[in-house]
Image (cartoon, rainbow, N blue to C red; front, top):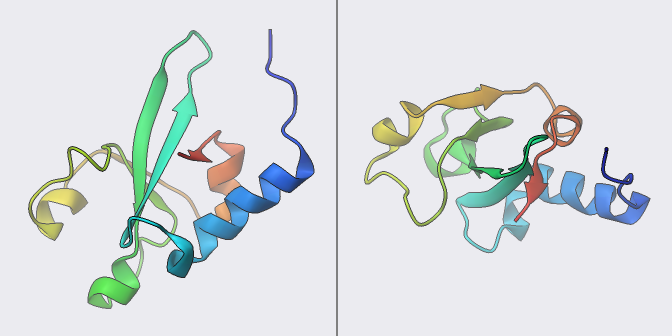
Length: 99
């Protein structure tokens, strides 16, 4: 059974947060979660690489970790397993939500 569709306002909220690092309460990270079809959850973070280190190419990348298990260095973070997307809309379509 599929979950009911998210209200439009919630979708807009997630997209706004995905694309606006200034709103992230744990900047330079935005904690995310995704429910798995068979149960359980994935945990991830968006990382504001551009503002933090002028590093392009990671604006829509979800790194598989959570804010309580962040690596000590940026190099270690960038080495984590990840999902790469082109747009905030693709992040939302993959089921990621602001935690």
